[in-house]
Image (cartoon, rainbow, N blue to C red):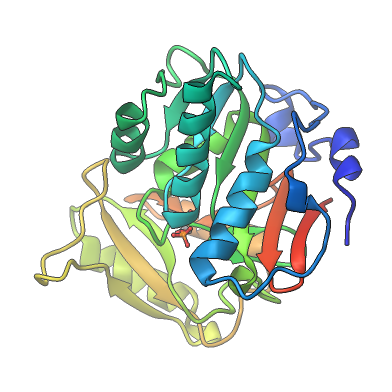
Length: 276
Ligand SMILES: O=C(CO)[C@H](O)[C@H](O)COP(=O)(O)O
């Protein structure tokens, strides 16, 4: 298991981010009691998510500008931050939510909020993920918030990902669950077909995301989502991301490559912090 002290010497390696996000040491404010890798007694999946979330909040310090993720794991993070603000253990936190859902949750907890317009550089973003590969590359966006998540997380000096062990894959797309692509509503079918064709060698099936009533799911940015399902995992994530990004009408994709500073994984044998 990687030691938490590893995080104190973390540096981003992505040159694209260096202009905005200068390397920052990431040191914990506190350690939760269960941070060491002792066995976790029969926790539910939600219990594991909360465990990872609590560990990530150890890295939040008073005065930080914080990216607030979206999804069931990130919701535990937001809850915890709200509680620490209320108790006075944390002060002067200001958050940038990655979705309307998270914005509502943060407001309900009294977490002060701002925007990327007013705070273009964040200290730390914490979010969940749908898949994590051995290189700490991610698939995100099954919760539909990929565009705002990518904008906020790319603008953060550190990005900590919180997952339970079910999210680990040997290659992106390997869970056989959705890899989302946000597309404009205009001629969405045209882009769905182009995306499916692009990955036909990987046995890709593309589907428009729909709500329970069968109507298209609409993102916070008023776009649609085409979900890609792969028979075979993506070998060249960078190449895939570049090719998807070239399609006119594609707004963003759920491949978050070389963005995570650290991934906190809660599993039956304990909590592990992985960093590059
Ligand atoms: O990317 C996301 C939302 O767009 C979520 O972080 C991702 O879907 C994981 O969600 P959960 O913690 O509920 O499993």
